[in-house]
Image 1: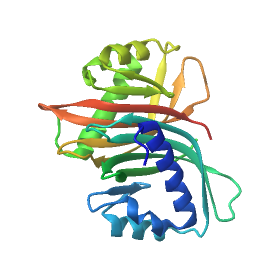
Image 2: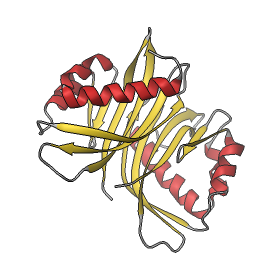
Image 3: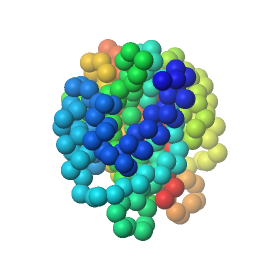
Image 4: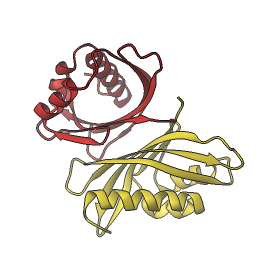
Length: 124
Length: 124
């Protein structure tokens, strides 16, 4: 994976939502035992719990549309904090919902894993 | 400051926006040389640059209304990742704008400082 933080963040976000929209179980490789997901204020720790939550979400189809990606170096070399804003459509719903999602990425070998993942819908 | 992460995050967010809305220069004590602010995709590093940016924002009055606070432990003991959503009103504007802001807090002595701060308006 690219080493430039902007490239890493952009590639990660693209991969994450493509995978999420196609097959949420495939996101398992991005998490570790210490990883945390907070999804609409419900929290889950570790890959099995996180994937169980994601797979159990009550919709069949979802499409994320990323609006913005901002990032900063984290507290240790290679760490990256990412803040995404975007919109999503679920199932037959015609009206997109706005969301924000914050990821904290940690390098591991030549890859990155998600240490923190906080997702929140934004109501205007 | 309280040691429970939820209490720390809640107190921090309350303090941050109260101070922001009253006197942005007073936020200087929350940042350090390594701190970063990304405000609407423009990035600043270190307390002087960050405060210069915040003080130069082109409005006289601002009022933040926090909607949600989510948090997770960060990558090292005591570290906290916070994701805020809310609305803000500037000057005489009557229509609130939605925003999201991600903070990465690092403990230092009995306090916390802001290592990462990413602010983004959310357009519905």
